[in-house]
Length: 144
Image (cartoon, rainbow, N blue to C red; front, side):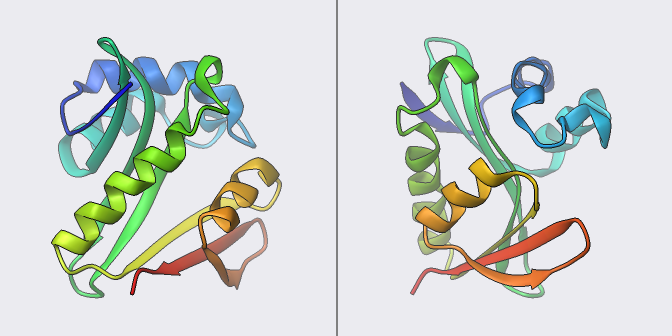
């Protein structure tokens, strides 16, 4: 496995999102258009990509909110065939390095309350509850 930044095409991102779609709770395609989302990630996000050969097997993507000087994580996904191998943790390590290099010390993300595996991952990575909305939780992590 190799971790790179912003090397995958919108089509490769879309293919990955289709593969991981059912791992989201609820499935990703029930609340976003996968093709449009893949294009948005390609065009505007900072993407940390885990590759097995030339195949995208893991993705952590987000945006640097300059006004608040925080990194908002929009997507965390790992191919089901590669889960449990530390790929998400490696991708977050690359994200942390990027943030330190760019003097960004706060990370933020939202997750549906029913997505218990993701919530467990984020808590294991040191994220803490910030807000509790109707369907979603907002979690934050400070890097200093």
